[in-house]
Length: 550
Image (tube, rainbow, N blue to C red; front, side, top):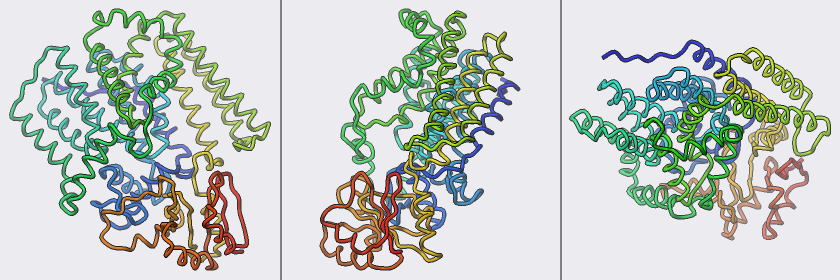
């Protein structure tokens, strides 16, 4: 049986355009604290130390996540240098691969290349996809491997080619090495629902057994290696990294049950404004849909219910379910009336004009909370005009006009955000400007940086040296030191409640090339106010106070 894997030439051009926009200005803004900076710094330490088994953050073992994201980021450093562009490059490629997988999955399920094109455009228009491309975490890579695995499984199911079955198991193993067992939820739920509704049964062959062994060997490899070196990690992985994320307030990420409902509604708002009546009508007759669409409806609802039931919640956790929403919206749009399409288009134009007016007034009124330049205003205005021109070109192509407009809005949003972030690093708590100031005051000498009660992972990324973190009460300074073999970590993490550390701290503060960083909204505790006397100069930024010797 011939296996066809083809992409529409227009869709290929769309992918090239997306990649170009994603790469534009990618390295012009600093690493966002805390998540992006943490992943970037762990990968930097791994790349420099050549220890690709034991991740470290500021010299302390950090086993929160398996290593695939760090490996990919380290490869970016190898190709482009240790900088923001190198840290983020492969996330952009991941998004493009996701768009390819969405196209292929839609075509495999619905056998309609026009719908596949529309689904890809809609998927890219979703803000959550754009967010995943701008902020280095595991989520973009996890979504890519899940989509690639499901595409391989669907190829195997439709075409019967064993090669795709083995590729499926390998990709599931890589997904497990990206974010652990959570990857299985998205994959297993989709496959079980598909098998149940299609009444195809679960036939286990020798190839499945071999594939499962490959998947397990690959997916569990890193866990077995590090746990063999340190048996205490078994309990840590099971209880702290899996069970506590389900039923406990792990890492201060506990959210109410309904947390995802307004988020999903807000992220799909332009589509829901126009399609809500159609969706309501379709939901009243769910079993009249093609079974492939029933699979998507049931799978996405099960996933949202399951993640809502978990105690620990973050917005990016549900990203791997959004490809299903994109296909469902594409199908609903294909049967929508012209009036419905116009409502969606008017919503996007309203957002586009609101963005342009907002950018203009932020520049004109010179608000303190954001710095908008004339170039930002000009580029946004030009981009908005281009969107109107493109919409005019597609005015007679009813089927593509609405998703093309949605994609154009995302591209405008992307370019506007890149320009704004370039000179508003404080909005994402990026420390690049603060480190640049410290290095300028150090006059070529290596600075000694002290940070009070907050873990800043990007300090060594920019300065090349670890800072001393003063642990008081903030949760970010709760490091997991139980896996350390030596005591060197104590040079970089001082518990201020230990009186023995205060003498060393005072000695360090008195040294000429020392800088103390204090968050403005928290300030320095009264017990440590004596440190202020060691410094004679102060620099205040949007979120930080820097004390230093002039």
